[in-house]
Length: 201
Image (cartoon, rainbow, N blue to C red):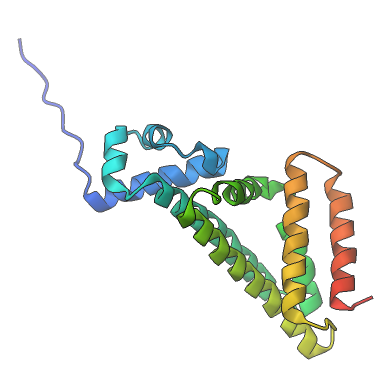
């Protein structure tokens, strides 16, 4: 009896295999939150054995932290590009606020909320959260400073205003995950509160 020789699948390089695992963790976290990132779940998503995932990552804590940072940094860069395209600081702030509380971004909001909770026991994740919160505050601060220079905004302390705005956005987004209130009301309240913080009303 003759047999048909089947071509063997190309063996992936260590770099390609590691990239596959990182991509699997990223897609799983966006879909189900970082709480879903277990060794077995990531392995199943990547189509490999759990032992192979363990071979290519330093630890699950590190993988969770790195995945969180990649997801939220991607969003931050996207928002930064949107903000930079606006004609005025006021328009930039409006675009930033509307984008940050857009219900279509609830997947990233879930990643943030879970990261705050899991960071209590995962120091690598806690450090990544702090780093990304600083980066978001700097993005908001840059818009405020632009508006202060142009006379559009009049905050007594731009840095504190940026932190206050970030805190309001985070709180409203967390509330949105349990569908408390409606998105239109949250948006109206946020814009009114930010106007007060920036001295534009």
